[in-house]
Length: 164
Image (tube, rainbow, N blue to C red; front, side):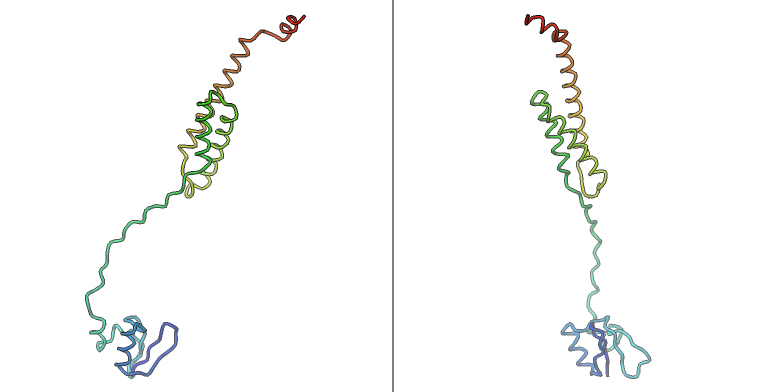
């Protein structure tokens, strides 16, 4: 007679060998199910009983090599993309003032977010490119403005003198 411990932790039996084979066929027991055989000194597993060896015999399970799990890549930071677009717009629109400032701000925000969460965000190169292009455009605009001021008449009094 056999007693088994089910997956719910309850003890079932005593039952005969045919009932145990029926439970194995139904999937209610397997080779790792604890079993106590009357007259045995201790509990064992169904797969270790010689009378059930034919039930559990068969080809050994195939062990395949583990496939490496591809590293999860983060998504490109939206601020990095926005910073690059704004910096490109600043150059294409011939020194559009708000675009170069937006490009600087968006690129800086992107770099801060990417540095804080490198596992979540990508796009450091895009953010750096936007930062450089926006910074250069801002410097170019500033230089162009100074050049225009230098080329303009020397002072306001000159304008006032022309009006009289």
